Length: 87
View 1 (tube, rainbow, N blue to C red):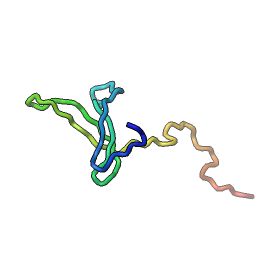
View 2 (view 1 turned 90 degrees about the vertical axis):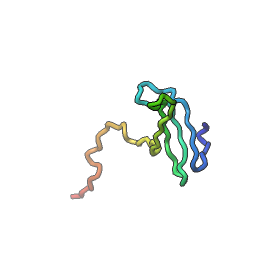
View 3 (view 1 turned 120 degrees about the vertical axis):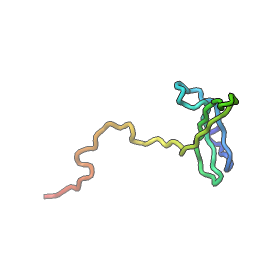
């Protein structure tokens, strides 16, 4: 879907997860909106019921937000957060 597409409230879309490498990762990933319009991420796993029927288990979560300085290994400078004292 286009990054400009906006789901209506209560709707979402799932796509095949082409980056799946482990069984614990979802078979499908996507996004949508709750009934009150809040954006969510959706994940789905294919499975079977005890009776052998196909099923899809889904999980809703808050959208991932990348932290700006999460990968910064630079320690803060020694003057950061300290007031300058004049003599």
